[in-house]
Image 1 (spheres, rainbow, N blue to C red):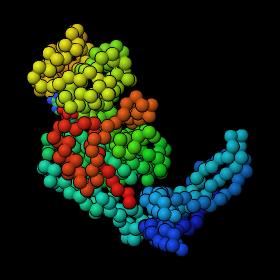
Image 2: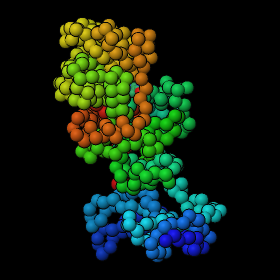
Image 3: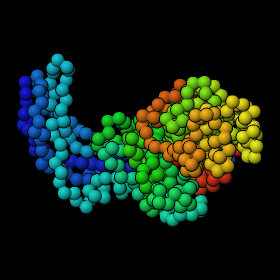
Image 4: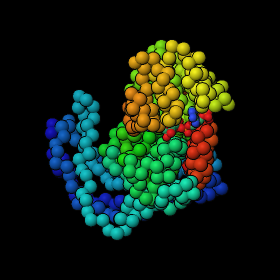
Length: 442
Ligand SMILES: NC(=O)c1ccc[n+]([C@@H]2O[C@H](COP(=O)([O-])OP(=O)(O)OC[C@H]3O[C@@H](n4cnc5c(N)ncnc54)[C@H](OP(=O)(O)O)[C@@H]3O)[C@@H](O)[C@H]2O)c1
């Protein structure tokens, strides 16, 4: 049976928005109540013109809400999370039985109607402001400012709004802030720094089916310009940059994964094409990229021998990762030759300069050389690599982390307000694993 759903049309719906959740005492028990505002009345709801095949029809009006925020609340004295919902309208469902079960078809969409000024201010979340770190000019860590008045990110159709739990620091963050990447990654000031994130989805864009409200995600949220980063309470992240958070990792550890994980994985598996049984040299093996690269080379790609450069105080750490540590600096090449007299099959350079040049000499005939730090690698017959957001790769990494193929070491955490200290510390070039910035939800 085919039912023309144009039959169900012309209704008026009230649109309300929950603008606040307020802590109250309910008979001495802590609780939370919601504050709603009426943001408009939508009339002239028009019917979709499609026909739906159904066996029996019942037209039912239902309320459609969208969760726009997840807030920390206390329920009976216990810390909990509550969803802030917006009533976005009402939809007629036409349902009927069939061989395949129940058909549910959103027969009606809300007709657009010019918004009143009140709607523009209260009808979307742009009236809300968020905590963030921003900078409005290039410079040292001092240009980083903490604000509680940054505008909410705009969420496009292919993006989700993430409530940020943690973001990690990468050298590229302070290199961008200093202006070293001007012309390659241009800023749109004020810039919110940061590309790595872990958090919870609070609003999916209209075309997003991959994630729902409440999903825990990680992301390497790099866009083609600098403006809307992750050092904030919220970030709008395109789905192409996201994956599900590994369940066994804390939000802090998970925030350390995306950029360094993707770099290590893409370089080892796609650029260097490391194969079972090979010998690989990884520079800065105790750092963010290197520490993941050593683990992936050994435990995922089956390299027989992974030599990792690091300071003496990090040698035990490199061993725990599965690597054979070597001190860098003058004489590094001789020390590597002692460990791999026949040469190395692949070099993963994260340092550049002399380290890169000396490493090229260590390769077996036909050996592969990739640098993520020095484009001069091309002149040495190697490849320069710049990591890309890739949802498939990131999901793969998330699963590898869940299966304990590799882990993330977080050496320091800072609250968002102290992000400048996190930048400063990372720029010293001595980070073991990752430095992470956390956002307080309380
Ligand atoms: N092109 C790309 O796509 C891409 C992607 C990611 C990173 N990168 C770049 O790659 C580099 C490494 O990134 P990262 O995140 O791993 O940095 P990181 O975590 O800040 O690296 C810190 C580590 O570097 C080690 N280190 C410092 N100088 C060294 C040297 N001369 N030789 C060997 N190790 C040295 C330190 O080891 P000790 O403390 O043991 O001395 C420390 O553990 C950065 O320049 C970054 O910008 C590029």
